[in-house]
Length: 103
Image (cartoon, rainbow, N blue to C red; front, side):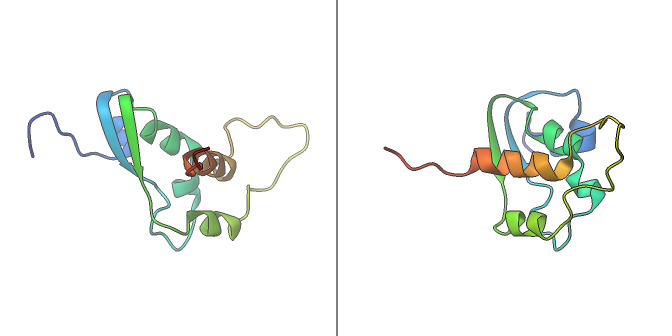
Protein backbone atom coordinates (compact mmCIF):
# COMPACT_ATOMS: atom_id res chain seq x y z
CA UNK A 1 0.00 0.00 0.00
CA UNK A 2 1.46 3.41 -0.96
CA UNK A 3 2.18 5.89 1.84
CA UNK A 4 -0.78 8.13 2.61
CA UNK A 5 -3.39 5.64 1.33
CA UNK A 6 -5.81 4.10 3.82
CA UNK A 7 -8.29 1.32 3.12
CA UNK A 8 -10.82 0.72 5.87
CA UNK A 9 -14.48 0.22 6.77
CA UNK A 10 -16.96 3.01 7.47
CA UNK A 11 -17.02 2.06 11.14
CA UNK A 12 -13.26 2.42 11.46
CA UNK A 13 -13.08 5.66 9.44
CA UNK A 14 -15.19 7.58 11.94
CA UNK A 15 -13.37 10.64 13.24
CA UNK A 16 -10.70 10.52 10.53
CA UNK A 17 -10.39 12.92 7.59
CA UNK A 18 -8.66 12.77 4.21
CA UNK A 19 -8.09 15.18 1.32
CA UNK A 20 -9.80 12.82 -1.13
CA UNK A 21 -11.94 9.76 -0.46
CA UNK A 22 -13.16 7.02 -2.77
CA UNK A 23 -16.09 5.20 -1.22
CA UNK A 24 -18.00 2.08 -2.25
CA UNK A 25 -21.74 2.64 -1.75
CA UNK A 26 -22.94 0.23 0.99
CA UNK A 27 -25.78 -1.13 -1.19
CA UNK A 28 -23.70 -1.55 -4.33
CA UNK A 29 -23.92 -5.06 -5.72
CA UNK A 30 -26.25 -6.31 -2.98
CA UNK A 31 -29.40 -8.35 -3.59
CA UNK A 32 -30.98 -7.27 -0.30
CA UNK A 33 -31.11 -4.11 1.78
CA UNK A 34 -30.56 -5.12 5.39
CA UNK A 35 -30.88 -2.75 8.35
CA UNK A 36 -27.07 -2.90 8.68
CA UNK A 37 -26.52 -1.67 5.12
CA UNK A 38 -29.34 0.89 5.31
CA UNK A 39 -28.06 2.47 8.53
CA UNK A 40 -27.87 6.19 7.73
CA UNK A 41 -24.87 6.82 9.99
CA UNK A 42 -22.71 4.51 7.88
CA UNK A 43 -23.61 6.40 4.70
CA UNK A 44 -22.97 9.71 6.48
CA UNK A 45 -19.50 8.62 7.62
CA UNK A 46 -18.58 7.40 4.15
CA UNK A 47 -19.61 10.62 2.43
CA UNK A 48 -18.21 13.06 4.99
CA UNK A 49 -14.57 12.01 5.54
CA UNK A 50 -13.15 14.18 2.73
CA UNK A 51 -11.71 17.71 2.74
CA UNK A 52 -11.72 18.36 -1.02
CA UNK A 53 -13.42 15.54 -2.98
CA UNK A 54 -15.48 12.43 -2.43
CA UNK A 55 -15.84 9.94 -5.27
CA UNK A 56 -18.74 7.53 -4.81
CA UNK A 57 -18.45 4.22 -6.63
CA UNK A 58 -21.72 2.39 -7.09
CA UNK A 59 -23.35 -0.20 -9.28
CA UNK A 60 -26.64 0.22 -11.10
CA UNK A 61 -29.77 -1.05 -9.39
CA UNK A 62 -29.52 0.59 -5.96
CA UNK A 63 -32.73 2.57 -6.41
CA UNK A 64 -34.54 -0.60 -7.54
CA UNK A 65 -33.22 -2.38 -4.45
CA UNK A 66 -34.45 0.46 -2.23
CA UNK A 67 -37.85 0.50 -3.94
CA UNK A 68 -38.31 -3.22 -3.26
CA UNK A 69 -37.39 -2.78 0.42
CA UNK A 70 -39.84 -1.38 2.99
CA UNK A 71 -39.08 2.28 3.69
CA UNK A 72 -38.90 1.91 7.45
CA UNK A 73 -39.75 -0.36 10.35
CA UNK A 74 -43.06 -0.08 12.17
CA UNK A 75 -43.97 3.51 13.00
CA UNK A 76 -45.13 4.30 16.52
CA UNK A 77 -47.28 7.36 17.04
CA UNK A 78 -46.00 10.11 19.37
CA UNK A 79 -42.52 8.57 19.47
CA UNK A 80 -39.86 10.85 17.98
CA UNK A 81 -37.56 9.28 15.41
CA UNK A 82 -34.06 9.15 16.88
CA UNK A 83 -32.08 8.90 13.64
CA UNK A 84 -32.79 9.68 10.00
CA UNK A 85 -34.36 6.80 8.11
CA UNK A 86 -31.69 4.95 6.13
CA UNK A 87 -34.06 4.29 3.23
CA UNK A 88 -34.80 8.01 2.83
CA UNK A 89 -31.14 8.96 3.38
CA UNK A 90 -30.01 6.62 0.59
CA UNK A 91 -32.62 7.97 -1.82
CA UNK A 92 -31.59 11.55 -0.98
CA UNK A 93 -27.88 10.86 -1.54
CA UNK A 94 -28.55 9.01 -4.80
CA UNK A 95 -30.76 11.84 -6.06
CA UNK A 96 -28.00 14.32 -5.24
CA UNK A 97 -25.43 12.22 -7.11
CA UNK A 98 -27.68 11.74 -10.15
CA UNK A 99 -26.07 13.34 -13.21
CA UNK A 100 -27.70 16.59 -14.24
CA UNK A 101 -27.83 17.70 -17.87
CA UNK A 102 -25.85 20.78 -18.80
CA UNK A 103 -27.93 23.68 -20.06
